[in-house]
Length: 257
Ligand code: PGA
Image (cartoon, rainbow, N blue to C red; front, side, top):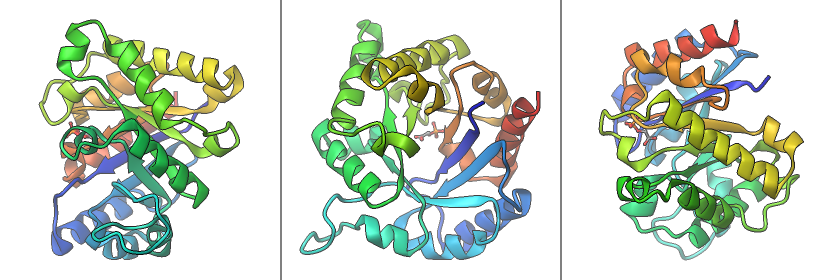
């Protein structure tokens, strides 16, 4: 059985005091590594060290929201994989829709980041997802195929070993509109089939596919109980322990049945 992953994407939110308090509350709620449910927080870059300190020794892992593909040098404003490792990150989110649509990142750029992240030993969470107009035009699957093909270009099965894919329909992110469990399951099943065709069924069976887009305590369980949904990438509801902890709890409940 695939281990659930519940990840919080804090985006450009919190400050040192509120972020540390949130991290401490999560560390208290998830004091040790859980065999059934993995917990991850991805704070803004400036707070990674503080949040890492607040979660050290707990079951809460640390991730970043982006990374640059170059190792070092004259790349003003960017951070490298080794810097993220240096401050205790195990994971990095790449290809988030806000990076794609607000910052204009292409599949090619995302692919370079994915490869650099994997090469440097980070667990990559590759986000894919369609716009509302693309869904309405019946293009959801072709958009997912394009983003997966581009994002994982040149990535072997061995390199993809720790890869996590997150399906995040853009129309559901931060909107309060969640994909229905059927819509999520259908996209996730499609992604798993893509992984089967691109790699093989053994690997596809192992790779975790998270759902993201307005996940809340009251919809988390129904979403994660879909056979191909292996956890959640949570934005808004990851900013309050009172919301995020019950989402972790929903995964624990599902893992225990
Ligand atoms: P949301 O964001 O939960 O606020 O919709 C999810 C995400 O963007 O990862």
